Length: 424
Length: 165
Image 1: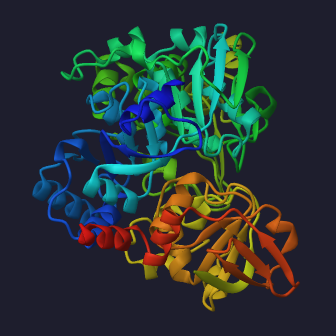
Image 2: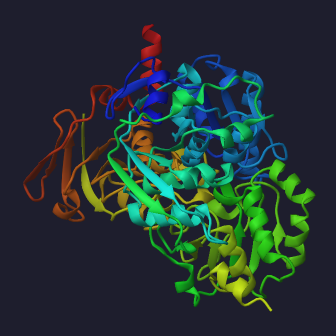
């Protein structure tokens, strides 16, 4: 079996599972946020049981419309706080957490070998720690609140072996955009995606999270990476729970995959996903005639400390071009505090970028930094669909923190290696 | 279980951001969501859907965000069923869980024109284009999924199952 099959077998009390088999699995952790939680709470109330199945296995995180941008959002937040109090559920409120997919691993809610479901499509991020994690809807989350179980079809898996070293200013984001360009937006639908190989072993947890985060953009059910010393180190001080043997989570040598891809990042160049689909991928250097009005660095894809360091390295001592708004949003309060300690926030503000409190921000066009018709944004987030960040007539380009920072300086989509080369 | 209505067609990769843009996610009443169904692609959609329609989609229908408000908006706008070449998995589950029938049918996009009258029989795994006298046979949904749909959604299904215990 591969790692995903091993986790699903264990979660459903079986010794062996096969792709296509439907299992009734026990959930280790379920997460909802402020836009999916209210419907889940309403559905839970309609189901009509008094108590959730296990209050220690449910987490609620306010991150989308925070701080409340309208009375409607404030009412939803109030409702979630009340539910969390009634059921004694952990809720990360404004200022105490950040973006759900950063907070879950950061606060030790994601452990290798566990089955996690979340009412958000980017729940697949947690596969970076060797968990089987997938997105569900609100009603299904309510059913998990009630029974602790979920039916899942064991997915066929695609294995992506990656070797080689990244060039300077080329990042895991460029790798995942490149993969989505190859696999296409529906190329992994219903399937699992497992990343392996020496490049992945050397990659930071932040980079692994960026890769797994965007597997849903090719339709995948989960993205996953075998846990190792990087995982162990990341979890140090974040959980007091015992970890399973990582040996038991290795994909067997004879594990089956529906497809295996071999990639080498040595010659990889900065990539950009162009409007209005994530698989419309081009080289940043090909797009240097595209002027921008907004640059966004943040989100569950690229708002981690490593991403902010990279952006700051480029923005240090420079100014965001007149006519461009640069918005930086750390993925969590922990990331924000770390960025403060490292002097990154000062670099951003000195450059003329606006640093906002940790939240999803402009990524989903709900709150903060929306786009007007005809405007263009280059963003480190994960989706560039029509209307995603505001007007249906705005354009969104997706890129790495290095490319977005370089573009903020020049006012055009810019290969960060070229900005470096023109330094005087 | 059956569904019937005139076809309203869409292309490939219709994402949940165009089915229901993020700015409307603070709305909680499904009737309010319905007013913005397909706002990213066709502002007149709620008017077209009123009479009870069948949405015909291409590949990867409902991709992107897990927002259940997307299928809810379609259902309450008047969509009786969504037939597509393929679905994104979270949308597929969400639609069933809120009681909006969905079924995969390869070749449906090319064979159906806007306005064609479609009839879907879920138990039989059969889609008929009454305007063109054409019948498609598709893989039937598993029994437990048909039960969730005939109960009207997962909440009702769970209520029934829990009351039996």
